[in-house]
Image (tube, rainbow, N blue to C red; front, side):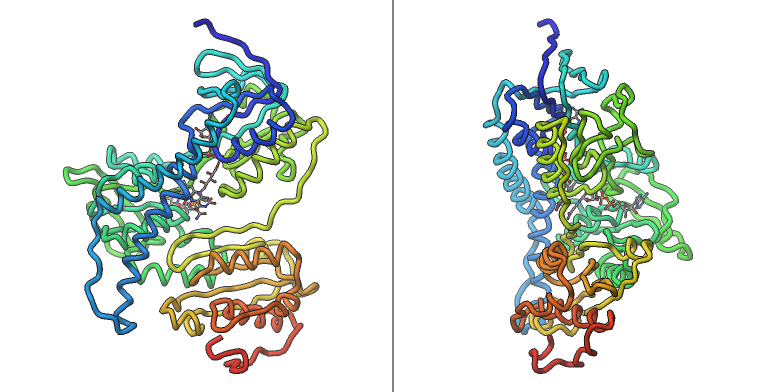
Length: 482
Ligand SMILES: Cc1cc2nc3c(=O)[nH]c(=O)nc-3n(C[C@H](O)[C@H](O)[C@H](O)COP(=O)(O)OP(=O)(O)OC[C@H]3O[C@@H](n4cnc5c(N)ncnc54)[C@H](O)[C@@H]3O)c2cc1C
Ligand SMILES: NC(=O)c1ccc[n+]([C@@H]2O[C@H](COP(=O)([O-])OP(=O)(O)OC[C@H]3O[C@@H](n4cnc5c(N)ncnc54)[C@H](O)[C@@H]3O)[C@@H](O)[C@H]2O)c1
């Protein structure tokens, strides 16, 4: 068949979370849409991201939990890990989640959907990998991101893998070297370790997840190092494919002796890069930043004052699912109303790492505040003696909250500890409502709950801002171990 040229009001490049959100909004104002997908439908989140990673973490946590039962006085064997069944469930449930996304895509109008990779030829024209051409009044870039793998890892040859490969395993391997102590490395590395895989986690510069608060970061480093081999500031000398797998020659710390270990795989979790380097942006008039990402307004998703919008991981700013979804809808809404574009306030930053203990960041980070010159105070709580946490034997963690000394408003926090996915939401909601620490302390706190630890940090913060008394040492009136 000869190649075709199609004219549409709105073209959306990418049918992941942000592209689908954009489509739903665009669909409200026009029936002239090209929704383009080069890879598989199903979204990164459901296929190889949020969902399969949490499916792997769940059995790992269940097994690990059994190890503390003895401390409760409960005797009995710790369950054996059946790697094949664990991975079967990961894949089955993953497929179920993907099927829900695919059902949604199937509902989209067939005449809008195009299976091909798109590339800009000029500001209004896209060349498709199937030979066709799309001419569009407005265009949304929603192309997501991909793994960023240092060339140094190529020594692992066919044993170099990413998270995409992990979720296809039929069995658990014996040993894996995980590179990158960011979000993916921590989540997958710890889960594999807890499922009986010999894991070594190789970090860089003592960084751990998204943490910037030195005290919380040090607590996290100490905690994870107590559990598994974590070389947070190691030096890797050589990565070599050998008969048995991948041989890694490294120093665990700059002063340590050389160690040589062999692993089945090298799992690269060293960050992701936006899919904007391969879509012909050089053929457009868009101004790019030094990473090659178009300059855009994060309140409208508009690139400059052009008819092009960018959403989700593609803009490399906040590569998280809920942000991709919000950004996609905003880009779709504004592409629909262009040239009259609206700005929308963004939600308070919120990030959760599903490690154990969980790590969370909310609002302004320690680094941002430190560099901004804002006069801020810090309140903290250790979860080691927190009542409910001790009862449940989950008493590990440290939370640090930041407040504005002039206004008493809660600004943000960084934390590691039990149930932080929930505490972080409470904090994000109160920050978004611009509540003062004093007002938050008027809200109800039950007893005995982990939220009482949050209250201790808030009380300390109120005092540190010079706006409240020294919190009582053991606060017996508010419940023992609060
Ligand atoms: C292992 C892992 C775990 C994660 N866990 C979490 C989590 O727990 N919580 C959380 O909030 N976030 C998590 N994330 C991040 C989250 O998955 C992403 O932020 C989100 O999926 C991004 O959505 P998106 O729409 O920008 O991109 P995607 O869903 O990747 O969609 C982009 C689409 O564009 C297509 N495409 C690319 N280039 C072209 C082209 N030229 N032409 C046509 N189509 C193209 C791609 O094939 C893809 O389908 C995780 C990510 C990973 C990798
Ligand atoms: N729970 C969640 O919300 C969740 C889970 C997984 C992924 N994600 C998203 O996916 C994105 C990508 O995750 P990621 O973990 O790949 O990236 P990341 O940016 O979180 O971490 C990458 C880490 O790799 C380290 N690194 C880089 N080069 C290295 C090298 N040569 N050797 C050792 N370490 C090296 C960096 O210092 C950094 O700590 C995250 O930013 C996050 O937005 C979110």
